[in-house]
Image (cartoon, rainbow, N blue to C red; front, side, top):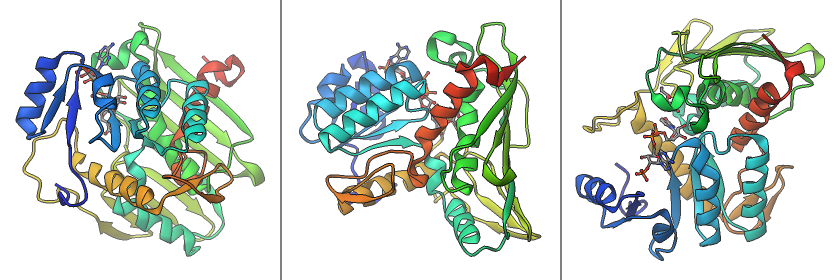
Length: 320
Ligand SMILES: NC(=O)C1=CN([C@@H]2O[C@H](COP(=O)(O)OP(=O)(O)OC[C@H]3O[C@@H](n4cnc5c(N)ncnc54)[C@H](OP(=O)(O)O)[C@@H]3O)[C@@H](O)[C@H]2O)C=CC1
Ligand SMILES: O=C(O)[C@H](O)[C@H](O)[C@H](O)CO
């Protein structure tokens, strides 16, 4: 749905060639490969978009970086903070672009919220709240072996919102309560994040119950809310409601609502690569090839993995 002069899908890979061929035929993609390695080695591929399941992200990211590709990896980029650090270090050492596919960050409604924040319309910020929950029957979500669970799949959208509105700051303290699914993955989790100056972030994510699926930030002057949390098409500030439809005239049938909004992150990737700037943790830019995913406020998707690791990995932060 983007101009072919800017974006072309030139190849698709699957572990079975037949499936890649079927997908390629359905979507008019010139090349199909029976392995991810063959795609990584295709000289016509500039950027690899990785949509495998969570546990395979790291291996596939490293494979594509080794082949010199820029990489856009689906969220959560890693199943924990250690994996994310390893991938970011590898991208840095090769001077290659790596970004976590937190597509939410590039929606027009998110951009509109960021300018409301930048203008100080809400006053001094006090609290941010996000929720994402559905009754979902996706096998991967309740499968420990596929790194399922609410925090990694849905909580990451809540964390990235809170991290964004608080400028990428790291919280001083994290605490959480959870319901654990019979398969052992986290089913419903509520997390409290305490920031300097008594500023608070909180979120609830669930794979077994419908939540508000909205995200809000409140200050001493006003409150702003976007919805749905993961693919915002509406921004309300005080009682002023603005719509940002993202059907974009697409006739495609998608598995998930607002999927046409994937074009925004694709446009961002292209913009980064054309700028040719690397973005370091400190936000200091340096000449290099592409932007690097880091804990930069704008690419703080990786931050979500730190939180999930903190929440899931430290019993002290996790009272049942
Ligand atoms: N941004 C968004 O809106 C969304 C993001 N996601 C993210 O995208 C990723 C994929 O999700 P989704 O497409 O629902 O996942 P699927 O369950 O459909 O699996 C995706 C692909 O993973 C590949 N795969 C590679 N290794 C394995 C393995 N060992 N076992 C099973 N599958 C494997 C398969 O590809 P093949 O067999 O063809 O090689 C499969 O087609 C996840 O990380 C998820 O978080 C998902 C939905 C929405
Ligand atoms: O990123 C997402 O939107 C989620 O992976 C899936 O869409 C979710 O599992 C079902 O909404």
